[in-house]
Image 1 (tube, rainbow, N blue to C red):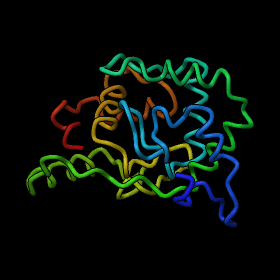
Image 2 (spheres, rainbow, N blue to C red):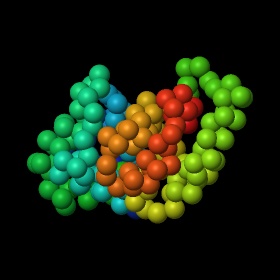
Image 3 (cartoon, helix red, strand yellow):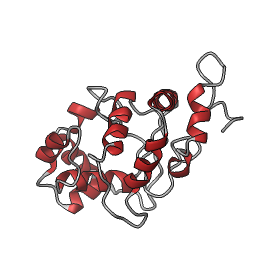
Image 4 (cartoon, helix red, strand yellow):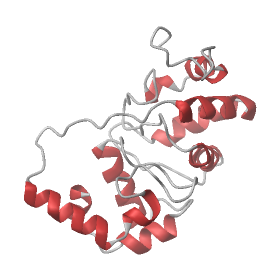
Length: 191
């Protein structure tokens, strides 16, 4: 990461958030560059600053909980880390991450068929995903909305299920639940 240029601010100097990202333990779950996830955590490079700060606040104060999965409650680990990281450092880390390019989507082991792509697009259009997240999930209408492009299939599937099943109740969860409450597991998988 140090030799890749990812630690540099726009003026070519080291970004203060880069070293904090590495020394505060963020890379343990999110990877060395924030877009190479481990466990089942989101890709966070290039994400909106406002969205990241909101989510960190929700996780830190216990309003956003992760449901147990094969990796355990992933938000519990982050709550522990946030307890020891000053807000000033969090702000620098988030600024650094928001300046990095979006993570590249990982190709599916078995690509979607043309029929599946059409079905997924129909679901995306019917529930109005583009209205908040942009036509390709890369241009949210508001900074408190996440960029979906570049996220892993597992992470997106899990979060959509949490919203649908009322297990995630922060941010825009009521809007999300209202849009996806009738989606089946198969439809969520296609999205």
